[in-house]
Length: 168
Image 1 (cartoon, rainbow, N blue to C red):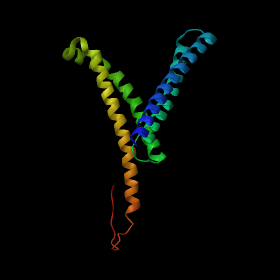
Image 2: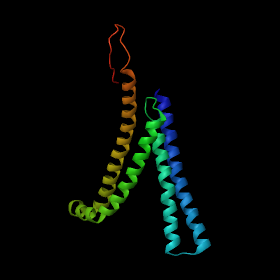
Image 3: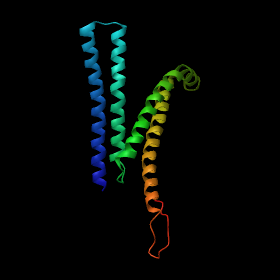
Image 4: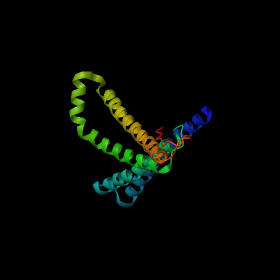
């Protein structure tokens, strides 16, 4: 129902926001702990960033899994949603590094086209590509479920005794 979908959406918003805050909180605690124990140097900075990245990836995959599993209007099995979430989470992480590597060239090109709005446009571009990856993962989860339903229905017969393949 409409109300159920709205409640699930609001719940997922709070869950995703809570996961992001938890990730930030754990990173801050980790950095503070490392500073107190070992002082401030390049090694502790690297260790803090490494642990942040290692914690952020599973949290992101978990949020993506919840979005792909609970948000659609249809019941989807866990396996395709988990596969899509893992793939999309890794693709989003790779996209972040590609964006960082392309940043010097991109910001120069955007400065020529958009002038003082170059940073705003770069954020919009990053958000657009991230949204396309998120939607592609959702489509992948739904499509794999539809294909499995189609494979199961191939062997079924119609009331007239004819074999038919129903593809949803």
